[in-house]
View (tube, rainbow, N blue to C red):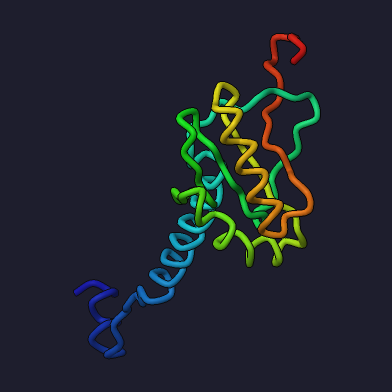
Length: 143
């Protein structure tokens, strides 16, 4: 008999591997990646062609965002919202953000709708607007 078999028979102990800590670590990593991957989807939720500006600033995640697509449809934080109910839904969000509201409108969109949305934001308690823009193209062209 080999020495290994003798040891197992003599000692009576079998070697086992506990998978529980490894499963815990894998699940924690999985949860971490799920949470971090969903954070970047807010800004790209609507396919808007934003105007270019050389002084574009990154949006704050706590800022309520009102978007207007090229067809004139209004969205509040990515959810379609009728213009008539925008003020009521935006009021508590504007108060929570200190009166700052983000406005993203498509470059080729309807200007009249954007002005109506700005009026609704003002009525809902939005005292300052953070206009959504994008950085100019890297080709060196100025906006």
